[in-house]
Image (cartoon, rainbow, N blue to C red; front, side, top):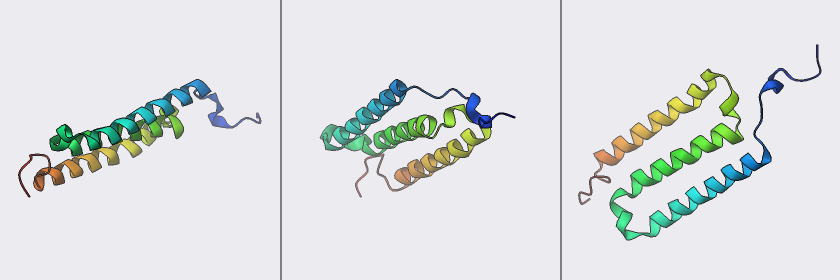
Length: 104
């Protein structure tokens, strides 16, 4: 038996990859802040922010939580609740007229 853990055969990303992902997350966050302050995006603000947040969630889970190299079950364990949450959030936005632009 070796002293190495069983999961050590997974190749971990390099420092450069982590810095690239951090840069992408920073850019997405800046776009989120920018979209919030631009009046032209008022009608599509919620869907745009949901999409950008989902992209950030995926990047964090795949790289910083090392889910990218894990078993398929764990990928589904995180992805399925995200899909359910997005569907529920969009349904609520449509139900209350936030996305359609109808007056409240």
